[in-house]
Length: 182
Image 1: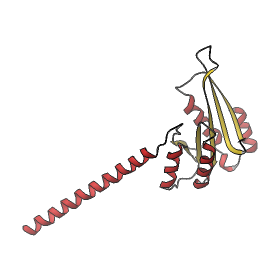
Image 2: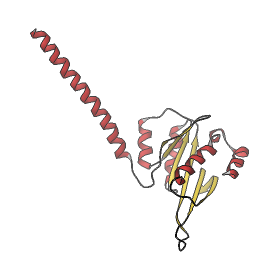
Image 3: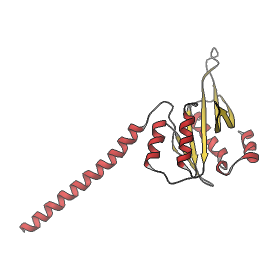
């Protein structure tokens, strides 16, 4: 990680100004409370099959079983963008097939519902950052299509609104009928 911090001081773009903290958050998420003996390799602007990633993190976890070399390793891709959510999502979707987990790290607060569906469909993690604040908005998924969960959540919220509106209308209608009779 310290080598990456040095690399960033010499080579970082504006969109990567919080890259070290983003990388630190991702490594912590994938290791803390899960493993104690691990090694990480960090590859900024690394190409796989001719496609450049803003950052690749490879986590090697040493096995607790001495007969095995390791019990898992994970390749994580990260794409950074300040404000262009559509572009970073396109990049992440293209790169998703080459890694175990894919993240986008953005400084944009505006998003469209379609973008959330794409994030859910491809299991992409989303980290929001600004000058002093870094937060994981959505955790990535390895092999899960989360669109169904997102649809259910949105339907539940919409159905709740419809039920409330219907109840309010029925109460209002009955109140008006009662007032006419009175």
